[in-house]
Amino acid sequence: MITRLGRWIGKHLMLTLGILVLVYMYIPNMIVALMSFNDSSQSRNLYQFQSFTWDNWLNPCEPQGMCESLRVSISIGLLATLVATAIGTLAAFALVRHRFEGRSTANLMIFLPMATPEIVMGSSLLALFVAAGFGGQLGFWTILIAHIMFCISFVVVTVRSRLAGLDSNLEKAAMDLYANEWQTFWRITFPLVFPGILSAALLAFSLSFDDFIITNLNSGTTVTFPMFVWGAAQRGVPMQVNVIGTLMFILALAIVIGGEVAARRRAKGKAAAL
Image (cartoon, rainbow, N blue to C red; front, side, top):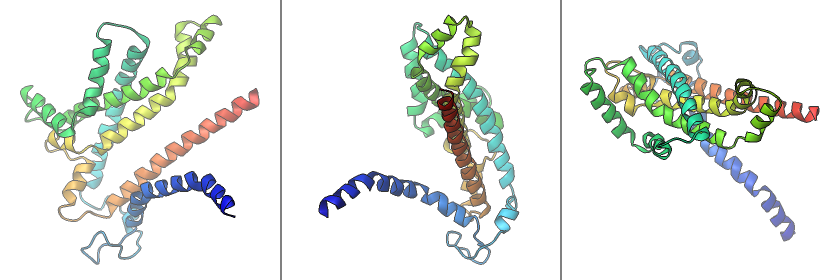
């Protein structure tokens, strides 16, 4: 009996611990989703569930300035992601596929923005903008430049790890079958690297959308969504903020699940073809 119990615990221990860790990680998201249905109009305690209501979902833009700040954050996030992903992907290819003087120094410089505290990076960028004569013009474009700068490092690291694990024999086989370099890149290399590029783009958007410290130092009068939440917290966070948080979580979850389903379908298709 004891032996059987020990075997059962050994067999299910890792699964049980994994489930507990996942539950622990998603508790904040569950609370945010729950509070998005909270009617806080009858109490000043915004963090205590009062009663169920659909009003927060039916009127997500009711708090003044919230949707405008959300639009600004999404616009900056998309632009920063597009530019950082393009530059970072090219830099990753250069660092992995080519040998050039200063390559080791370039690798070190890529990691510096990731290791630098945000308060230091934000104040340094602010000093740079002021020295360049943009002290009175801080706003959308200075935020965008700052976000592109720190997102590039994360894109390079993510894409480079994907490239490092790529089997070069696949490209050599394509060239042996008379494919030129351009055809090899688009038909072999790019499809294999694309998951890494997509992951880097999603990471860059998340970092840009979520950033507060660097943005706050270089925003001027422009208000992003994290800045709106911080400012609203001084008076009382509107429950519609939880609606936006829940929607972002659902969107991220849908992207991850969709990618996993697509990968499994491709794997089944390859297995069936063999």
